[in-house]
Image (cartoon, rainbow, N blue to C red; front, side):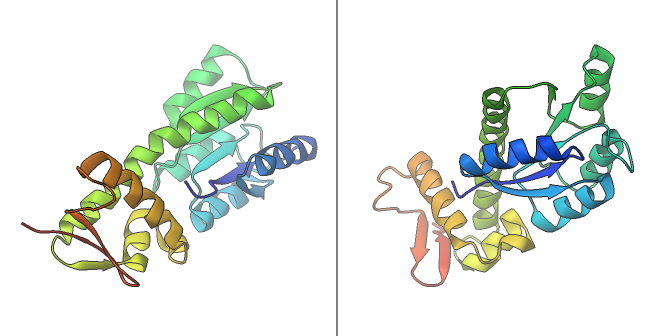
Amino acid sequence: MPDPVVVLIEDEPQIRKFLRATLEGHGYRLFEATSGADGVVEVGSRQPDVVIVDLGLPDMDGLDVIRRVREWTDVPVIVLSARGGERDKVTALDAGADDYVGKPFGAGELLARIRVALRHTAGASEYRLLTTLIHHAGKVVTHQQVLREVWGPSHTEQAHYVRVYMAHLRQKLEAEPARPRYLLTEPGVGYRLAAE
């Protein structure tokens, strides 16, 4: 999978610094926001693979950030918060968070939870790729068209996404992935689902 994109919405500089070193050191592309409003903008413009949000932000509650993000995307959201009570966790999960990590936290646990979130979304991306090809069965779909329809407009220059996910689909669907019969490559252009 290409380097996953993470948007971190956190106002504490020490935590941002720690997470920047941890996440970038493990191959993640990190974009940061120090307020809820800026975080919502970052999520919209970066189309991240995972969002990490603190609940105690200076301009709005993290729950409001989650609700606003949920209006238009299903990106996995992990709450990172000092609020550790059961009621806080339940409220955040009911607001649309996918996971909850209490502060203080260990880097290993957070990284594992990010990997779990990415595993869950990988299947969704493969499904969207396959449905895009089915919708255009028998026709060539360009790399840019696939990227736009599956990953959104901010990913249209990242053709390696498509190659990686096509390889995964071929492993799952083709009898001989090295010599595909259904998921065909049109060199220099894109892909085509063979219509039989």
